[in-house]
Length: 378
Image (cartoon, rainbow, N blue to C red; front, side):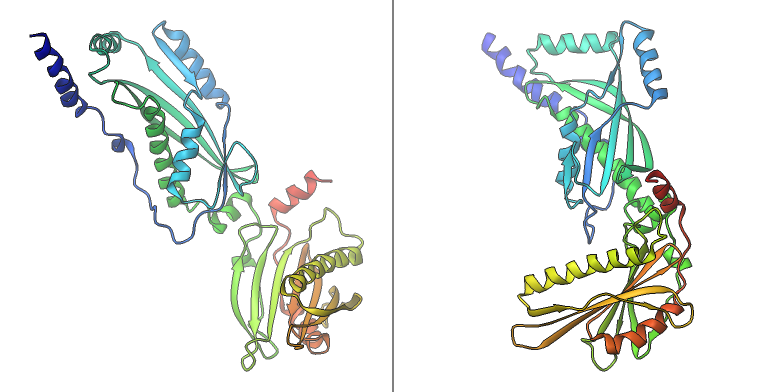
């Protein structure tokens, strides 16, 4: 008879295990097959908002059987669930490095009533062979930020199910909850398009290049190609122009905020921008092993009609076959923006085209985001 009892217990455990809540039950559907991965993300556990912390304390003090546990869910469960999704370029745990940050805080509301106590006692009496579920409720706050500037907060109330059993991983409850929470966040973030340039522009109140920027369709015989508004508002917008007969001849145009709080000394601003561009060309020449690199001194110019202040420099070099190469870089200031042209042909051909084209460009005024940023650094 004793042997019969021992063989029935595992059978009972197996049967009851089928009654355990399916972890996928609380997982929201989202698109896990994106064409391009989302930018890198740094993940942090942070303090509860004051109002929720107060609510948590009140619940904790309302009864000897009630508990409110703050941030008791293993933080690496959240990191693992996000990494496992492979939706982000990189995921950093509690450290800088991500273009975006995700701040998570949780409050787990737990009550040990007669039902929970009885279930735990029964599980103990069966030597944990029969799985028993202990359920609690978690209120979670997830704040998405860009370079430490909050842009959107998501709030969720989800079940946290812990299974007492010899056949269950003790860390599975936190892992399952983290997957559930991440799935709801991703569903909402994708619906909001929260990692897009448009969402960030609206959240930050940065320049709206889509509606406030005017560009020429032609620069003399060069036709406009693609325009790309960068996600980072400090990088602005890029446009390319191409010659119809000589496809290798191109003009690259970049418009971005002046990276200064004041710009009374305009020549210094222009030289700083050209120096940065010159270093990029020098790095390109070194990586491509170009020879005979010669840099012309900075020349100050102004646009044809609006007399916008500008400057340019040129770089000449040769490739491995001895073919001559050129980079002509022009920078102008308009409003609080820098307008930078880069061509792959000499200044004698570039200058008349650029000095006229820059007057046809209408740039957005100073954005609220940039105004606040400059004020913080004054």
